[in-house]
Image 1 (cartoon, rainbow, N blue to C red):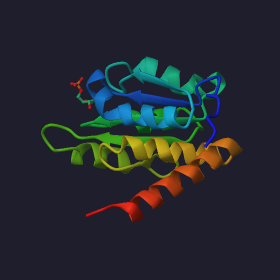
Image 2: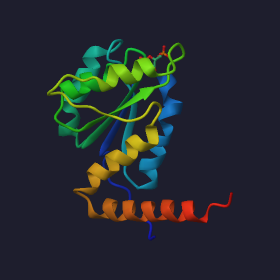
Image 3: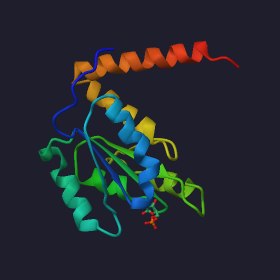
Image 4: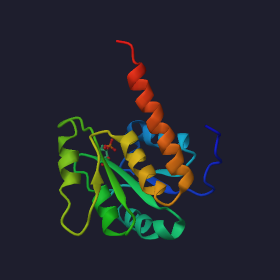
Amino acid sequence: MAKKSTTEKALVGIIMGSASDAETMNPAREMLTEFNVRCEFLVLSAHRTPDETLAYAAAAAGNGIEVIIAAAGGAAHLAGVIAAKTNLPVIGVPIKSKSLQGLDSLLSMVQMPKGVPVATVAIDGAANAALLALRILALKYPRIAEHYEHFRKEQHDAVLKAKV
Ligand code: RP5
């Protein structure tokens, strides 16, 4: 497939609750890069930097962001707090925690109250979060839709070619 130019501005915000989440979230950044979609990749905490988190969420759409991916572990309120302050689609990634292996993160994130949706993916599901963001963007950007079809075909062919 011909290489397509990368979007000029960041369309996706990847936010994580701690620098310790960055390694887990790198696959999301890599997936978006593979699709030539720019992203912001930054640490903001619902609990440790609440004012900055709310300010980011409130300004994101005006800054050109179209989808937000929010990752947090433990008492994982980041995605929900961001969703409370923006109308952009918010995808939550529950991060695997040391004490409860991410079950705490998953349950904190997935049980949003009616009226404030967060699309929660699997524990540590960074790549799928990016793919879901790309599917949302593909509704607006034909070249992302085309790239996604190519990705699906490659995945399909790889499964059928697998030697076991
Ligand atoms: C959450 O607590 C973060 O998202 C991270 O997953 C977890 C641990 O954070 P650190 O104590 O490593 O900063 O807020």
